[in-house]
Image (tube, rainbow, N blue to C red; front, top):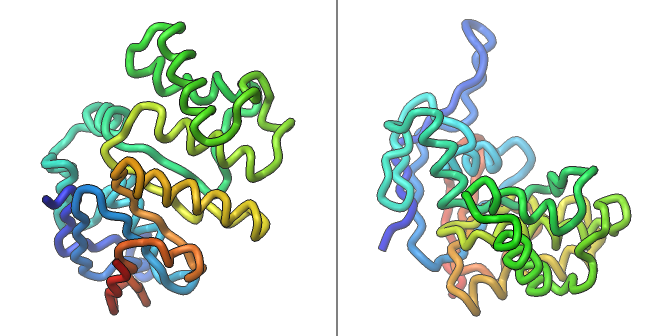
Length: 228
């Protein structure tokens, strides 16, 4: 079953003579439970494509259907609610609120979804435990290593049980050991729980456990490689 279907996606930035055509007619699909990596050199359009698929941006032209919903047809308010209730995000800079503790960062989207404080706290601690950070509930981000911050970011992304998890260069700011630990954790989410994952990476060794690698160059998909 297709959970993402993007057709003829174009994305341009700027106006007049300064227009940059970043995505050039891309077709992309992902099935439920699939782990897909998007790879390519810097400037290939990887992150821009992921932003279209993950409802963080809107294409200049084309259609995007996610979990059966026509994203282009949604109002901005509906898009915000859709992101909150359907999607999870892991960013390369962790995107943690510096003045909130680990559990408060994980609780934040849960509270926005309408959970009570106690419900959100219990669910947040369960997610933090699941990523191997038991006992780090009250630590501020500055008190954690980069790898630990990314684990909290993953806990926040999965605490609400999203249909699709998007990871944009999740190892970019980590050393090789911490990076591999984060990739192992993401892979476990897919293999053990069937989490649908779309991940942008430029490191092939981090994509070897994916079902499929989509290779991009100059705003186009040039090849697809099935691994399992």
